[in-house]
Image 1 (cartoon, one colour):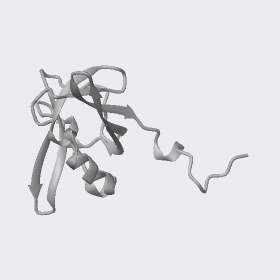
Image 2 (spheres, rainbow, N blue to C red):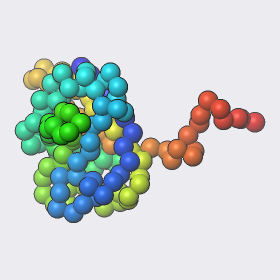
Image 3 (tube, one colour):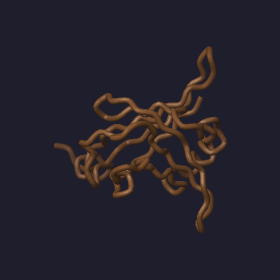
Image 4 (cartoon, rainbow, N blue to C red):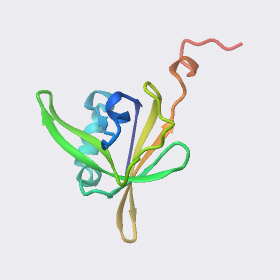
Length: 133
């Protein structure tokens, strides 16, 4: 079982109508966890509908992992499948999301989840140099 999380800022390609609303899984953001994700069963969840996507207000969808390569090397993306609209309409450009990928082993095999949760704006997040009082 694995669980990997990272922040994602909603961009134009995610919001684009009639698309698969890709979420780029960045090696830079995940560091060593990228290799863990890449070598797990999660990265092989390439068939449409193989990943259960849970949105911030509890809506559910399905998706799959796409693997490709460009001039920077190999990369992974979560792509949302299904009928249009594929994502809730409340997402706005620049929204911060926490994306959690979880792979669970059940009695019937592996199940894959992508949980998208609204993240606190960075200005409201507690930091090491913030003062309380």
